[in-house]
Length: 145
Image 1 (cartoon, one colour):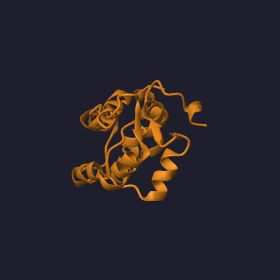
Image 2: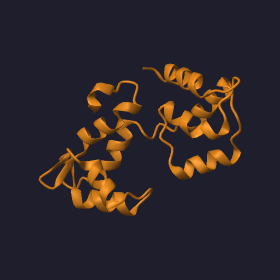
Image 3: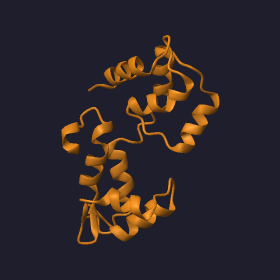
Image 4: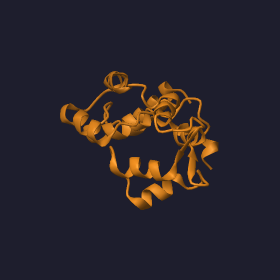
């Protein structure tokens, strides 16, 4: 489904009297396929107002940094791929996910890697493709089952 279609559907569901209420802006951004951090949401909400469709389109365009593309995420994993074999150790990935950025708790981390861990490593290309499938225009929601 294209971003434009997703946005039209989201706008139709979230709008009240032709505008998306300020409180629904984070949901609207995620519905458009963006994945803003909690820090970014706080920054956006500090100046957000109720938005019409044109404002929604402008907000999405402004905050679509293209950094959540599968290739960009895979590139980030490659930094930690010491053997350049498409894997990162579970221990190193755990350290990254539980100490940097938006920190995961141990249980959340275990849930995250479930089905991707094999002999102490994660094959990150498969992991990234599966995790980002719902957010990419070419992702197949059926793959998430």
